[in-house]
Figure 1 (cartoon, helix red, strand yellow):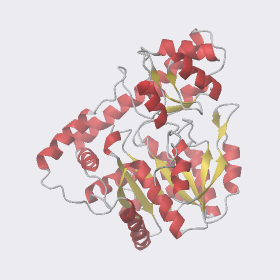
Figure 2 (tube, rainbow, N blue to C red):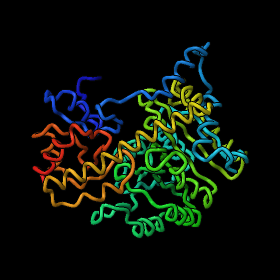
Figure 3 (cartoon, rainbow, N blue to C red):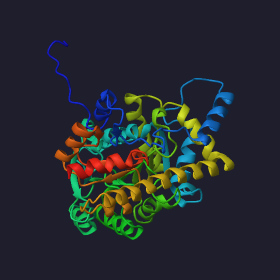
Figure 4 (cartoon, rainbow, N blue to C red):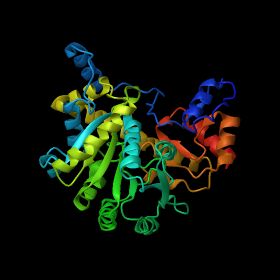
Length: 396
């Protein structure tokens, strides 16, 4: 059966990491995959996570399966960090949450749910969006369409075009929105724009699917839920896929969640019963370790405060690299305007580099960037900035 199987193409992001690892150049730079690096180029384990992990090992007395929807304490903390502890959605039990193996696992479950329960619905993705979105939802059998997002002239949000695109989305379709730190552009709507989006979606009868993977990396834990909260004021029903890979550094622990917000508690329970069927035939039960860590940190006042400070350190370092990058390019005599990068948020920026320029950076300078020109700003350090900017100057 395997005789005529051909080698599959490499993943456009993770495949680059494999090529990077094989590169013998000691000065190679990886700005492709979305993993945070500190000033020394290491992906650290947060101190709050270390302490929570110690408690997990001390307290754990079983390796039995979790329920299909995961640990209830974890699911409760997920809702509180997303909406705020006193939010009416929580008080009215209009939200139900399932623990999932990463944000990617949550997205796939949503894809299966929409394909089976709403087979005529299309899912609308921003142009551009994370390279894996189309792959995940295509594999689930969904038809995916695009709505306008980035203005290539300003490297900013083209809100008017975005708004007009959404106007054209048919009733009972779904739209994927990035909760904050849009991947790959780093460009987010303002709270006022989020409110207008929410009003339009409610009027259109379009279901929002919010990919919320970077809470805390834009402006702060509470500040970064502003867009989501504006949506909740306008739209009664939505699905949120969240991840703790970035803001907890739990990349390999695959710690995510899927939250359904419905008209009332009974409706939410019915939708979750269908979600559970999709969970059962995908992975049955979520992994426990990362969820236990998150539940302990968010449930302990002192540990939570320490975590908030650690996330702020991550956010501040990324923002410092944004400004240093733009400043260094200018100092080296680069005339192309990269100033928009300082206003973008989160780990990623859309550089505007062409595919040919990206290829030259890889082949001639061992600098690895996704073909779209997306740069992982968190991969920049003070020690590699000079070489990076010299190389970019050379290929422009």
